[in-house]
Length: 119
Image 1 (spheres, rainbow, N blue to C red):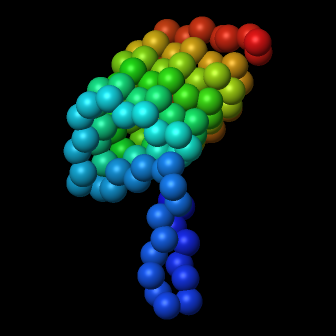
Image 2 (tube, rainbow, N blue to C red; image 1 turned 45 degrees about the vertical axis):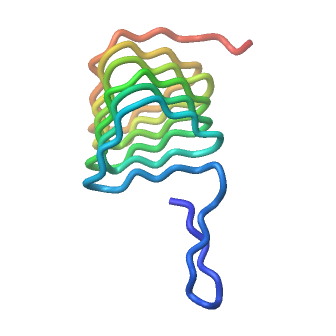
Image 3 (cartoon, helix red, strand yellow; image 1 turned 120 degrees about the horizontal axis):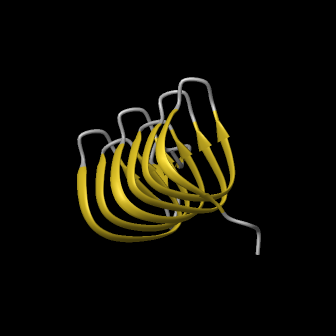
């Protein structure tokens, strides 16, 4: 999560980022210029530079990103144009296209996969 705390205890949110906290449900089309951190639930379509799905996060969406780090549940379609990292509690299903993938012990991959080549 990208919060910056200043000396007077105010929290400054970094521009271009979106945080979906635990218990929050979002449905729709999301265009996020930088980073999206999900610990809640997201359904729909996501275009983002960096996607992070934390433990307890649930995503059922068409996702187009450069980098993804998954430690929750992701389904539907994922296109990752650079690095895809599946952490210990990741569950990834659906159609997945990636350039580079790292899968940690304990992660589940129940998907049709397609390795992309760098353009």
